[in-house]
Length: 169
Image (cartoon, rainbow, N blue to C red):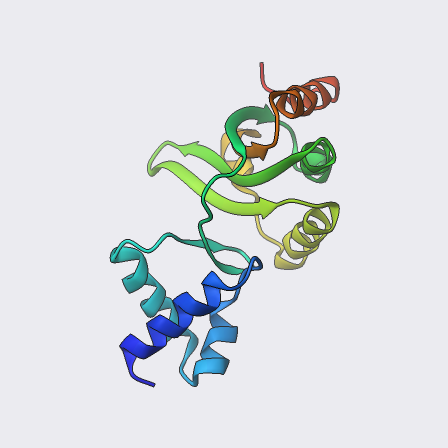
């Protein structure tokens, strides 16, 4: 398939799903290598398409219909699942994790965790990958971009994180 048609197919697929689509899946469906898809997505992003890369694949950035805030937290890696569950159980979505790196500046990792099952899948992927969390680069201090419906939801999230000594104050 020619590049322009392939990129149109990628955008169409992303526009019609709420779940991430992996480069490998696109490659299989479009009959090219995964690296070709990665290049196609890079070209689409460079042309202004709002494509988000997550650990589970690509998503189109959706217009914000929720309120968005950043919260500062600090915890050890054993508290990661607890932290993420506290956010989603109190009405939040964990959009990303942000750390300040001394050489590279701000590093952002897309998460898009809305449910307990999203958190469970993330934790399973983390354990399977046997890799480090971004927060380990900064002694556990990091930010999360959180989406939520009402100011009361944000207050509940912060209160729950504070109660568990995770909210950075």
